[in-house]
Image (cartoon, rainbow, N blue to C red; front, side):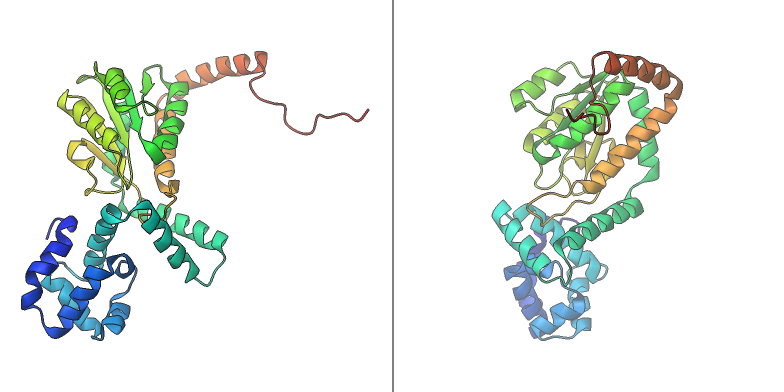
Length: 296
């Protein structure tokens, strides 16, 4: 089984061939996939009145190599089907069940996403992405909707290091195409998007790929619509159910890209930063540190 989005259709088409226990599992998954995504095999078995081994066999029957792979397919299903209101409701219910403070729960969840990203990201793809950025004639960046802050952060620091960076994230689709219409094989296009994916980001990346540019996608996995147009796929975990997207792990990947580029251009960067420090001081870009108020 390759397409998670087809999961419910596959379950329905095979329903007649399932055992009684498997039919109970199938019915629960069809009606409550948003709840099932966080259930262990044992807990799903309790709810549906079957054994844990029956749940595992059901996953195998669907073509998955174990129950965790079925859970992963459910995650993809949830990402694409839940509305913003549904995501908020499920997120609230999930957090309410945890016997921890809200602050601790969120910080722990973000920490887990960074760890998962560290385990799953491809080091070679990361290195190749850095090499492509260093060799680009021009770098175009697009990150729509909730990913826009990530693209702004990336563009801000890249602009301190390079003089060939164009961020078109804040534009509408027409303006994005106007901003990238000259893109060619010597350029690099970076697209950033997480569920729910921005259609204009996907369309812009499709155009960049069609015009021969090297394409880098920062997204949550191979199932992302950006992946089909990406020469380099950088994956980072996001929270598929939370109404407020977790961007901690993607931001860590961006930090790593920026540090890698700065290390490759250290001599040039030191000279540029020295000049910038003079400008920042001359035009008082930054407020003085500490309490400078004087009592009269």
